[in-house]
Image (tube, rainbow, N blue to C red; front, side, top):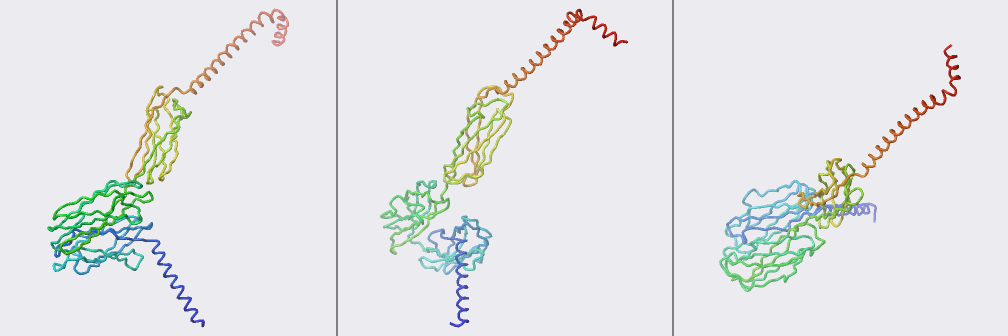
Length: 423
């Protein structure tokens, strides 16, 4: 192989690596999906307007900037509420969803059947559009079944819930041999615990049917929206018909905080002293499935003029934090029992502030250190008084000794000494 061919091969390898590397990088960094859609009425009536809703979700850890999208309509559909040009969504935060709504019409000469619409979208850094195909049922006055309402109990992580589907025959014709099948969510994050397929011999024109399912939410699931695939098969005069829908399930959960007071009082005996620096130690546990944000604790009581607060920040699920609130008690508070209230503030998954409160009664007593201080001062005063008395007695004694003892015995000597000094 000559030098020219070797250089050509090496350049091709580097070019392919660059392309695949860029592709992998883009794939790893951004994941936009538009799997969920809905339209009304169902089926679409030829010549009449209908609405199409598309759920565009950013399933990645990166913010999607300048998301471009448009609806690529084909016969028999056309957009009726605006010119169908490319639209740009400035930003779509990580794991957030936006709903895109279109108003369309089907050509009045459209034959009964299922038609496709292509929804194309891409993030700003990508040149290639993602394409999602949606099936739209078009029918004149024929038999059709549709899910007209869903009633879902609160679904939290690691728990069971109930789903009630209301299915109605929207036409003026009866249907028979109805099979309704609800599948697990992709990844088995949400499982159907009951019999997945239900059979009904017939559903009359205009009749409603309620179908109940028991669901289980896995402990490994994250708080988000999920889709349960639903298939409805039935038989009418035209033969076997099939309708597929996605039943949206939103997982709602919140942190659950538990407050435990471990130490009350500086001496850990639930006694509070007047005019003293005291403390309350506590542990805050998050036993829920969602992290608690903006957590802080505060204390209120008539025994202090302080308003002690301690900011924790966040407490992750299945975790805890220990904190201490310090305060100074009033000097003039009277001994007795007083209520103390500890309040923990936090934000739930919807960033709404929640609180938990715990109240206790504490025994307030006179500070023993104050008595010792008074006794010490009194002892000093007594010592000073005794010293003054002893000094006074000593002075009196010396004066008496001089006058009674020293002067009679040595008076002549003292007289001579004083007379010499005077000369």
